[in-house]
Length: 270
Image (tube, rainbow, N blue to C red):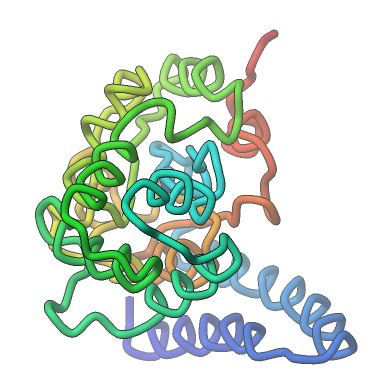
């Protein structure tokens, strides 16, 4: 891609990102119309660079797209924490959790290093005021079990099988610690995927393009041949596009994996 082409791509992506700063209802409405127009322009531009590219790979975000917590986080923190002396209400825990999670993490350039314990100990103690290591360990182990999570789409297994049978490879691309692989095994869905690119192993977190490029490398496809689906505009949509991948926003562009399959040209029967 030429320098001029890269500059134009950056300008288009920057325009899409400005939508996130809309504040009022009228601005959001204008922003939605603008986003539709900008998205069309982006895909026209993408087509001018890559032509009619067939999607040979599907990249899927984990939390918020493939799976979600089975119970609200604050509820779990409180229910397990009561025997350890946690007194905060669920509302207080949620507010403190959001604040702590949104702060810059100064211990490392990455939040999820190896098993992520250092980061999560900080989040748990900040959210609940409890630094008891037994409490933390019980929470930490709980979120590695199948009872802590549920699938966003109950038809995922059937759809993924159809997609792979059609010759399209699938990878999970997630900002997560090293518990992700045993968690996928616990949920009995690890066999649905050809590869897993987890930030703690790749040492890069979305929206860094590196993690998407690693997933494409693992699947042996070019970035422009892959489409990523995730629920976070910044991490998933912008990050994947910065890597050269196509990208669809879960809950906005697509609402089910069957719809994803249809958009990449795979028929799902039943």
